[in-house]
Image (cartoon, rainbow, N blue to C red; front, side, top):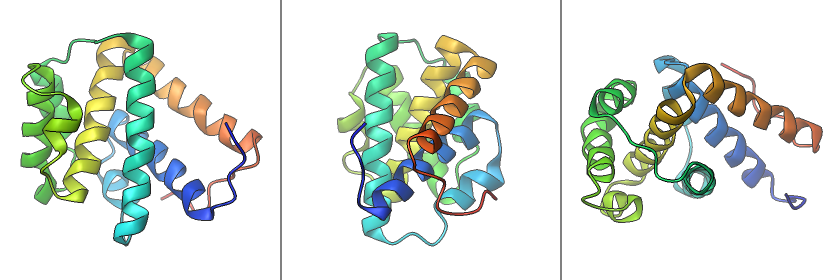
Length: 156
């Protein structure tokens, strides 16, 4: 990982990591808190980091199956205003009707963020199980801190 001079990029990588962890740990309050108060520019950075995380996981795992039951359970943790769009988009990806980019392309920015995070969480849950998926997210957080990128906000 290159050295990041942009504090908003560091913020984005942490928010993306924390959002995915919140979905994996089934923590609805933390899902909502991860993005609270972000402007469009910061939200776009979070989305970009989520896409990178998703693509890395997809490349490493191949194309894991995504059970509709798991999609519905994880997407139900999304804020109420995002849940339907998020669930619909991830179901289209799971059914291979559309790729992730096409499935989220027409959604509002916050729906895109939640859909990509839900898709990543469901892939990880299906391929790794909850405990191992959480371990991997936690290992990533430790690595960020080791590299000199402490979380720029308090954990909620």
